[in-house]
Length: 171
Image (cartoon, rainbow, N blue to C red):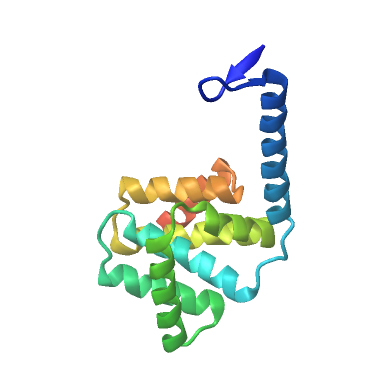
């Protein structure tokens, strides 16, 4: 069997299949190389976390002052930042979220570097931000679900964290 590439040109199918497999092998090798890259530094982890946290307050299209204040408080508490450092991180997080194609670039860094309980803590912080304005928008709920899945946080843990934060927000 031969494949026609251009009028009059033919390539045996075996060569075409071999080229496809070689391309696939190179692609998988590159992906494996990226997976074994050096672990993220603390700054990358902070930015990835902050970008996910910013994403959850912005996903409904409205970022209120209450949500910004809650994000700043969460960042200050979690990373031990002063007001100026938290403002800088929030600005960088907003830029990172605006320029991101998807959430994987953030969750990949965090999943590779953090222990399961630290990944759960990110989900807990996200729920705190979701409840900061007193209402859960379906886009916010969906964003937390997607991030939890990408971080490897189980549905049971995600729901448990949501209920805990919700109950605390009511009190």
